[in-house]
Amino acid sequence: MRALTRLVAARSGQLVVAATMGNALGLSRNTVARYLSLLEEVFLIKRIPAWSRNLSTRAVGTPKVAMVDSGIAANLLDAGTDRLLQPDGPLGPLLEGFVLMELSRQLTWSDQRAELYHYRTKDKVEVDAVLENRRGQVVGIEVKAASTVREEDFRGLRHLADRLGGDFIVGLVLYTGRQTLPFGPRLRAMPISALWQVVCGCAR
Image (cartoon, rainbow, N blue to C red; front, side, top):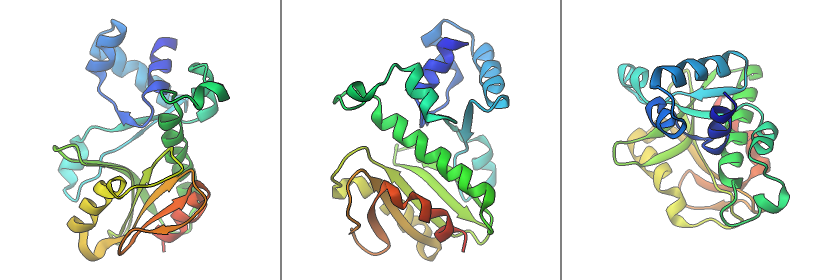
């Protein structure tokens, strides 16, 4: 179980494929699926469902997984400050997991209901987090563990905006820099601290 939990911590924000995890750990797919359910029941992990306009597609889409507590995840990975700052360190997955869980927490007390998803096409166009309110309006969020943002960081958000048209409220790249920067209509790069404004904007 500890080995699986460490693997989840290392793959925070990635797709949950029980068979792949089982191969990495020498466990059967069914055993991994059962252990993941147990970890979710004790609130150590959370699965983020795939988003689609088609409800049946949404039901069978592959979820993402994230550790509920990013501090526990960092501890499992022995990720102190020095390791986090290394080029091949786990800062990216841990930061994405932190953002996903913070969004999930905010949604529990938001006055207006919205649901948290992730988005990924067959062509591997991705958006880390998708917030959809009851009117079908969407905020897309990408997480970048970098102090600068490039045009290509908005690829998934632009794809989602083109698909949704008027139902797309805004697309945000949350990054470790300090400035809010425009990248086109309804697209912005914002500091991670803006995370605490996002749910209020979606649930209006």
